[in-house]
Image (cartoon, rainbow, N blue to C red; front, side, top):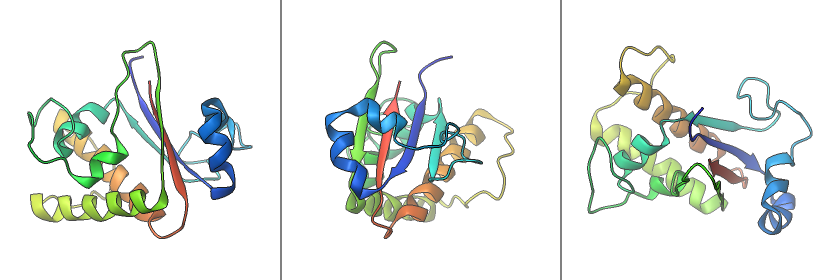
Length: 154
C-alpha cells in the first residue's frame, strides 16, 4: 500500500505513443512481469516508497535532508508528486537520463557513500540509500543507450 515509484526503459519507437497515451506507457512491454526487476525484458526500477526521501536528498522535496537551494540534475529522475488519487507520469529523454546518471555518480563521490553490493537493510537510512543506489545503477546502465525512461509515482 502507499504511493510508490516505478520506472522502465522505453525505446524511441514507443515514445510518441507514450506521450499521447500515458496508459500505453504502462502496458507497452509484452511481458506481463515487466515491472519485476528480475524478470523484465527491459530495464526497470522500483523505488518503492523511498522516492520522497530520495527527492529530498537530491534537493527537490522536503524530508530528511530538508529544503535545498540547489536541485541536483539527478532529481529529474524522481521529480513529481502524487496525492494517492492521481498518478504522476513522466518521460525522460536520453540526454536527461545521462545527466541524471552522471549526477548520481557524482553524488555518491561527494557524499562519501559507496555503491552497495547487496540490498541488506539495517535501518531506514539503509532503505533509502539502497534505493538511491538502485537508481544510480539503473540510470548508469541506460546512459548512452538512447533509451528513454518512463516513470510513475502513484
